[in-house]
Length: 372
Ligand SMILES: *Cc1c(COP(=O)(O)O)cnc(C)c1O
Image (cartoon, rainbow, N blue to C red; front, side, top):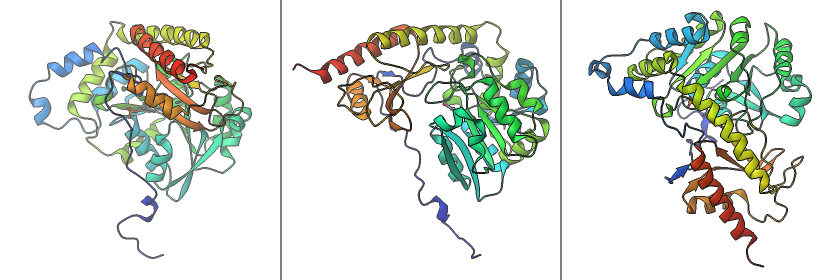
């Protein structure tokens, strides 16, 4: 094999990530906390002594691990951390196998994971949800080295059944591929797999502070798994990833007993169901969600298996998105999602913001239907 010098040939199809966001008044595009940051964490940040910035943080985010161990009732050795859960996924991908290798995932899912896979020399192996749903073993057909699953799933908001995931873990056993379960939205759903993570050799559950805790700008994520698995991920992660400010602020958010996070989660669920009803009243068919967002199929872009919500819709989702933006509201357009077609994802937040979204959407759909 010839020596490959810079640049890496497998990087040539990759592009730096473009979130495609321009500033708007009401940003419902990225599922961050629309109520704002966790107040306890914000207070810690405000009162950081100058030494916080002059000195290094702990090498492996000890204060944060201690708070997570208290919160989730696991040992410190069951926890790893990262500069956002994206970084944690990256470390875990790197630790999981030697490239070239394959990473399988039900599709559609979190769009960044295919890129993160390629960054680590892993070939993405998307499996249509329609196949994966029938039998979790469909995900293992390509004999992957790594499996990624998001529950509740981004961008659909759906959660696979517990039994389905237990079947998958059984098929994987102690020798199969590492299964990464992304629980970025588990706080808004009905259940989680944290207990299974510490008891199963092949399962890593990831969490983020970017959604419920409102700390996306701080970049903090957590991973929970068996001690041996966590040790391997920590080797790949390396030291000093989480900043000093982040490790103490995120720890404060976990230690908080005021009930702030629980209240936000409750209000999010309530507003999500209310928004779902409002959209249904408009003849739309949002997918029932366990997360802090709704995905609204638009009946264009060749979706199969999805009711044609807007039979007369001539607008592609990018046009709807542009029209909403012109009114100061940003959602996230997903053109031609496999099995769904064009769809619009909207974050759930305080009800007044949902009303602004509904008004803008009404105006856009009205303009589109137009005077005949
Ligand atoms: C938002 C999101 C994340 C967040 O990652 P951070 O890097 O912690 O901000 C991870 N996974 C999914 C599926 C997400 O939607």
